[in-house]
Amino acid sequence: MRVLLVEDEPDLGAAIKRTLTQHKYLVDWVIDGDEAWAYLENSWTQYTLAIFDWMLPKSSGLELCKRLRKFNNPLPVLMLTAKDSMEDKVAGLDAGADDYLVKPFGMAELLARLRALQRRSPQFKPQKLTVGNLSLDYGNNLVVSQNLQEIILTNKEFQLLEYFMKHPHQIITTEQIRNQLWEVNAEPVSNVVAAQIRLLRRKLANVGCDHVIETLHGLGYRFNVN
Image (cartoon, rainbow, N blue to C red; front, side):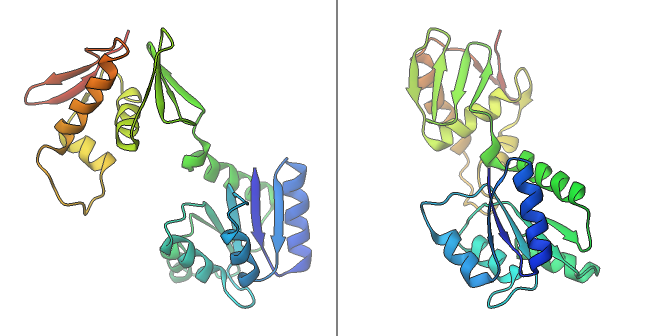
């Protein structure tokens, strides 16, 4: 796991890097916001977490968060700061920080916060999700049946099947699916869920899973697996 640490206090930065290194993180430590942005723009470097100090030379941690989110970068960010008022915390979270840690803090708490961010991050999905005789391969956007047949899914088909597989045997309404898989402000289309399910069913039929998605008229859908 690679972490970008942006902290201009030498002692604190060194202590954080030492602690994270001891816990098997790979840490890039920089001391100002502009240098941090150069690291983030480097397409060859993929970070799993970032730790930003709020007060930094050149560009603040708050500005870094805003720039990340402006470009739809989902990188989980932990903000470090001496600012402890409610207004400051709200400002940091509204700027795009995922969590907030007030100085001074213990390294045990820092590690716990990072573990929590990892669990919530989409980057930390398991390589495969298996339910019944179907396995979703996160690395290749495909589904594998029990007899090892493979079909490639579109992003939306993959998300829809994942949602069903995470809620087997449950009645799921059209509204629940729409809220989960489409943007809140997306232009509403009355039959978008039904159309997407129809496309997914066709692909599942190709691997012998003809009836795993059941339509319950007036209620919604149910994913049936053995």
